[in-house]
Length: 406
Image: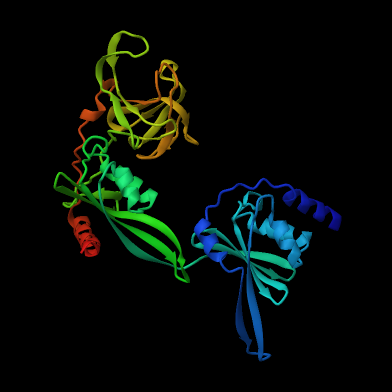
């Protein structure tokens, strides 16, 4: 029986393929700064001083959990048991390079094993009656507000990067304003922006942090300032509202990608490949190959695949008789297929040069009840406004956010 268990363990851990990525890099880097720490505890029964030490082990390329634990006296039976107990939370065969395994030692013996599985979650393994038991715990966190102010010197995107704002926050800022602002044509040198986002950190170790959410966005274009507040209402969800409590999010995005230039307008034009004039039912955006394409609005994928002269295309069905179409894609995002629901701003594919196309670009169309309309002339005004108790709650939330702007 023992031989069978040993062989099983070797099968599980002998030949791994470990990826060079880690979802917990910040967590791991901080923990790895000290490979061993010691704590002294008093045993009240025997009046003895117990020296506890923590060893931080880190997976390297080609290593497995078995490789790391074997030198500390754990046999194949223990390792197989630990693997089984971890499986509901994390697959040991898919643990990536850099993942930490924290051993709490009592002398030369392992007392506990702690393995982080998320920013503020970890699994603790204890051996009880010759069996390992696993328990997931949520670590206490605290939240702080971060304020960033910037001036646009070239593109908004690069100017925001120069402030060291997190990339996820910059993208969310652009998405919040993309309903009413054309970042390619309305931004000017000297325009200004300000944003507030929250950052979470572990209460027991403030060095371990995670970017939370963009809470406030402010954009000053030609000396005219607009302010957007991210507010979560009880029945409408988590959206951005303007200073008056009016919903800022529009039904469909004018430009479903970032950092692109408009290369062809809606209407009659001479086709660059076919050579004759015909109606161009959409608009084209030039950008580097592989640029992420975003869903213009909430909807259901009607088609995801080859579309003849359109090359790789995606068509989404939206409410109120609207459809959006994205053509000449290089490829599709994971899980994007017919019947799948998508949300506004979700990555659905990547810009390419497939089908009857002369150069890499995105061809973007919007249809209303089967008729093509110019995406740039799509009416974006929202009629949804907070009222009653929700408006009162919004005004209270605004005051809280505005305190950080002083």
